[in-house]
Amino acid sequence: MNAFFEKLTKRNWGAPYHAIITFAYMQGIIAVFKPNNLNHPAIIYGTILLFVIALFYETWQLKKGQTKRGMTEDMVFNCLGWILAAIPLLHFTGNPDSLFALTAIPAFLKKDKLKIVLDPGHGGKFSGAVYNGIKESGLNFRFAHRIGRLFKDVGHEVIFTRETDIHLNSNLTKDLAARAAIANENNADLFISCHCNASKNPKANGFEIYTTKGKTKADPVAEAIFQSVKEAVPELNTRTDKSDGDSDREADYAVLRKTKMPAVLIEFGFMSNPHDLALLSDDFIYLEKISKAVVQGVIG
Image 1 (tube, rainbow, N blue to C red):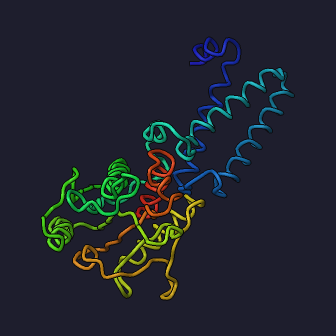
Image 2 (image 1 turned 60 degrees about the horizontal axis):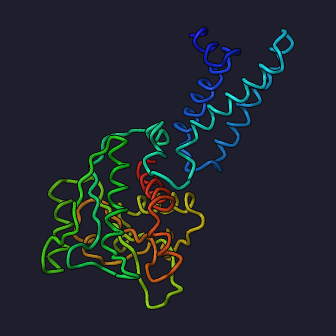
Image 3 (image 1 turned 60 degrees about the vertical axis):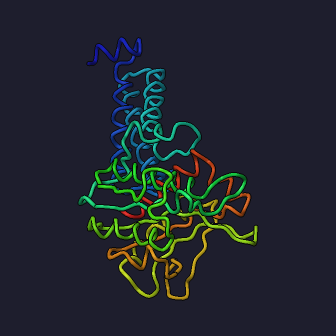
């Protein structure tokens, strides 16, 4: 292995080991503390500690006769290992799957297998709100299926109420009841309905999460998702109802009322607001940030 690395770097066989050790160290930090982004204290202090240790080691090596050029190469490989480990926490445009390809979402620790029903709200003739030719049903589908993919990636079972742009029943009341029935019939552990909001007031904006009225088992889930999204997407306005001591808003929505397990309904933003609509239509940054934050909020 040493000979291979020496041939690879043309000179310093030890440098690649720095990348490997740094990568493993950062993966440990991410797995234990489960940060949503690079601003998390664990990442900041962990990185400082890592590079202080590396610097002391390199200083010690210099005293033993190592060249300064070798020290520079080692520190460069340290940085390379750090960058590779931190890729899932970086937010940039590009292929969404590339954000998780190297480490399979190391921030998510697999827990007991959950059965989660994801409901892309509306569908078929019930398209929901329509702005600039964009249907709410299509946006809901994108969010629900991306979130579902992330849940599956960490070992949880996911069931969707719809796999295509269809309605479940031509009668709206029965259509909503059918969505809840899918969750009940499958004895799901959690039901998440995905929606986008709209208002006559174009200034209305922001993220909301709903539960049924009163204190329920869904409240802690909703609060965890809300706080995770707030931390992960600070540029997004969050709308709350603190009258009962928590952040979720309460409503008598059929899909929440008729489900037997903890159930939440998420409004990812207002299609009637130009800024929110631009975010909702973003296939990469916003979709990835908020989808990952929802999953992080659920599994902790």
